Length: 546
Image 1: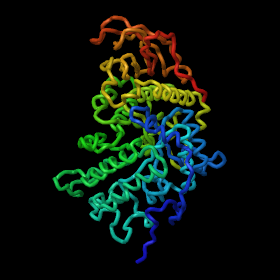
Image 2 (image 1 turned 135 degrees about the vertical axis):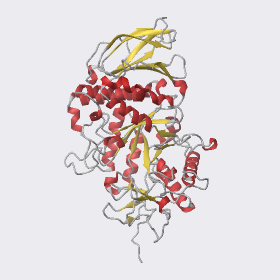
Image 3 (image 1 turned 90 degrees about the horizontal axis):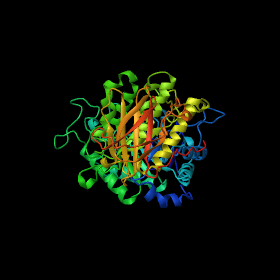
Image 4 (image 1 turned 30 degrees about the vertical axis):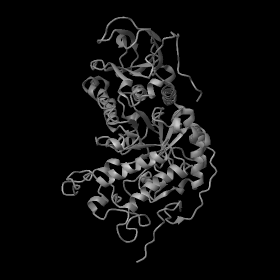
């Protein structure tokens, strides 16, 4: 029998629904030398990571024809300009590797070595990454070693037998996604995947990979009932071959590309995902903090009147925040499948919904861990994300959306300029509660700390729309505390509640601390202060034109 197969190593494919692989030269003259040289500093885990998650086919469409996607060339200019203007540090692209089904968002790959031809040529994609790098923006690629689809021209039954996939369906077929699972115990398959990861880092200058669906790789019983899976040689549920592949991946990549980060999307409490391989870990740089995302979105969906009964949902994450190197995601997964947009998840009228999102973003960006935000969340996209349409840029003509976008830009400036917020993202020394148990008022107060004793940021969250006047809180240092952000500012479409601007710590013992301050808390808002030994009068986050 004849098999109409594409080349698994093809560098370019016909645009789907066509299925042929194309012989292609990938010569390109890179101009990102300065970025690649500085990357060993800029891409370190002690640097800020504010990642803008993007699906290239629906970030923006042609202004003349909403059905027409932008090509890599247009995206290079538009996306880079926007991300730079918004002060994000990185973009993370939903999988660009060639995939037949557009509705899979790229997660069902047939051409592992080719960027999709829907948006242009391999050189077009290189130009896009080059442009982002020249503008000082890192690029993380979503990578899918967990499974592949059953399309006839792809990897499935490549020579008429299970070649890339495991022949035992208990280990080789994914019941949820109806896709095929790589045979991680086979050297040729391991080599295919390892060389593929290195290919994107080497040929396309990617600064990181986000490894999709790690939980499904490392658990033999993932989405399987009793009797549908076979224990490993020790009688356990871990997929030992997949675990050893991931360890090898991280070891190899960190050796060859020491300034690149590999991020795990791992949704269980599997231990030591971001611990070094030599210490029994999987060796990833960072792991998505799914528990934080679930608890936080659950908490914010409650009517503020009832939040006092759910206080644990907002404080629990700190109990395990330093067990791994966590990245806080508000990702594409949370704004699809009838889960509603981020803004629409919030309770109350329009003003309250926007105030909630502003407070949530300030909380996220001052919570320990690096950050990831899906496109549209930064300006209050109303509809759920739909891969067939652009996100709704026209909303920026409306004041509340414009105000939210302005806040996001300034939160990014704050996060990337305050050492206390990023230099020790994964260290418990960087965080201290000042007020953790005021469930009745739904107020939370905490500090983030840099390496210097005086490098301290104080964050006060008022999670109801009731202003709190004369609220006393402990602080770690005596002296002046200067307000550097108020998410209720008129500038962000807040209510413009008058705060005190700067406050002096007094030697009044409070919550077992020696010093305390009195502040006025705006309704449904975050107030952020910086310890100010120099006693400046007012310090405002720079208002960059937008």
